[in-house]
View 1 (cartoon, helix red, strand yellow):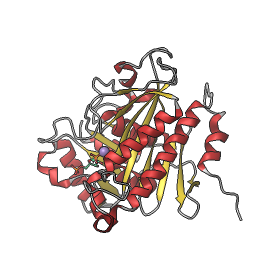
View 2 (cartoon, protein in one colour):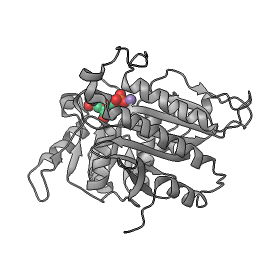
View 3 (cartoon, rainbow, N blue to C red):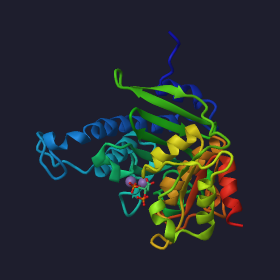
View 4 (cartoon, rainbow, N blue to C red):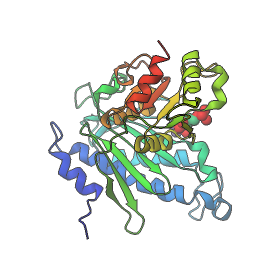
Length: 331
Ligand code: AHG
Ligand code: MN
Ligand code: MN
């Protein structure tokens, strides 16, 4: 049998290729991988709500059943806190950032973590894939001082690591530390993640476009015209439309098969819907590391300097040729 690499082994083996590595990032990633397993277990039970009780019910331990996004939020925060490596967290579920007290009152952690604990949450009730997205930066303020807002408001190009877990037909963790993108799949028999997708490359072009066409009438002209192009019957077209409504899953498919994901601004969502810090930036980092492109329509996503932690941004990413074609419709 071929030798299998677990995620734990991979993180340790690759630690030395990471500049300034002290093993702290590895510990942090290990915390995230563990929380991912707990959320995976809970997501797998979601279909059993009628049998074991739904949100608001009291379970056998006498605890209230939480909504899965709250559950995921709690598990990831706990996992990050336990490792004592991060000094702050931003989560989609929390209005303000959390400043972590370190093992002493001041904070010696050197990283901040930003996350969407459960992406695509409207899909949970119907047994469709959801995910967790995370993004990690080195803090700007000195170690030993409390974390500040500016530690979180860094451009995506400063990310040291980013990734996601997709709770799908199989559960996978996909991440980058700036040396390419690797994917690991949980073997339910052992509960371990194994390297299943080494050095993922987004095909240069593809035949899938992913967008919520329900918002079409409100889209900017450039996007409308690109969509018409995708639908045109010519050469390799029409393309196929695939839209799950869970960006992690839509992106994961497009990354493996080649495609473009779009969430433009529209009349309802003047700045788009997706969040720059914990949706667009981590996915943009993965996209570029896999050879693709991510833009807001005029600027590279990772060059944008954020001004608020929950800032929204129009988002287009995927196969480089497809994104460039889209951009030509904006000119
Ligand atoms: P979340 O569940 O974290 O709020 O994110 C949902 C996001 C994203 O995952 C998805 O692609 C998009 O919202 C879908 O939005 P529409 O239903 O407007 O298409
Ligand atoms: Mn989301
Ligand atoms: Mn979410």
